[in-house]
Length: 129
Image 1 (cartoon, rainbow, N blue to C red):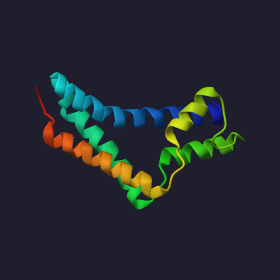
Image 2 (image 1 turned 60 degrees about the vertical axis):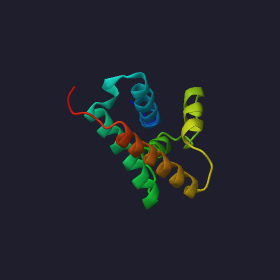
Image 3 (image 1 turned 180 degrees about the horizontal axis):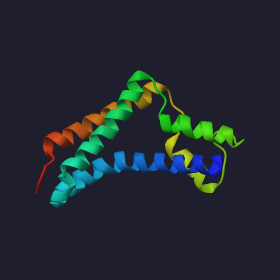
């Protein structure tokens, strides 16, 4: 497998994790409002909380996401520009990488994490149904 394809795979993984973090909160809130008990499964909620906690810790510590670092290294190894590529690659990057000061992302991640914690408080996870 070429470095470029590996970089694309890391990008797709990164987008999937972002969708899990953002969509997970939406799913918990909407699912509880709809009466879906499975959205409070302990492991789903714990994995979701761990994912946003990792993102917030990175932001507060000023650490670049390891997936971003890995993808860029793979693109360089493939002889590509860090964020140039095909259609899918272009739009996935536009979804993930915005141009704003670091404090904006730290604040956004922190507020989002507080919303996740609020959902834990409002709709606590269940270990068994």
